[in-house]
Image 1 (cartoon, helix red, strand yellow):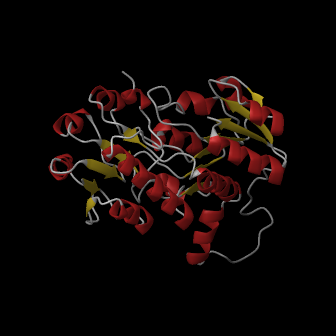
Image 2 (cartoon, helix red, strand yellow):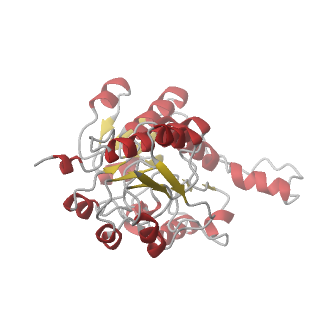
Length: 325
């Protein structure tokens, strides 16, 4: 059985597949595959391990309907046409759970960095602007005892809320389609409507998947309902916020600041005005970027591949309905 891997992934995952007797080919160039290149590389193989931004769309799936499994080196699967994959009986695997702590840590980092203008002030030292002390200069805002609002209180959102409640005594509110009983019991979290989440949050963190319902959810109208002292945090998917609307909200001081690990588009252009705003912190989508987490993701992705080529149920599947009927 042959597997095509779209990036150089940690050895832990490669070793598992090799030990299972799989023949591996990897894309090693530091550029994205074109859609046609992805199809051409997948036609002679039995499985695809996709890391990065490859679009697993209807055209690709129909051209490569022979694939026994597609394993994502990610939790998110917004770039996959899941209905088409399901219709073609191709199981799609992902890597949930293992990046919870690392991603929550980055969201927490962004809250602190944005609230204290940390990235901008670090750059001011490089510019030679660290000089005369002014008591009213470089002021951030404190988050202790404030209200954290979480949009999408799943595993990552819960861990972030736990950190904020424990370390900074923050009140936790959240908006989900379903109630989170553990958060309500352990953190005294309060479910609120989306509008109330916007109105009450001093820090509002996005921790949900990108879906048709969440795409562009945080737009001019949403930012207009937030507090002028609020900080917007997105460590989920860039498409959940409307970036021009976010820029306008910050420029007009509709909201106070923002922290982003994800942008729209990615990568962000170096001339994006967000990069020069004092109260904004931007990172290059590093939520899962620790040695431990990326190794664990590679292992799960590999295990999904191994199960798929054997015709067994994947360790984690985003379309388990392929196994019914």
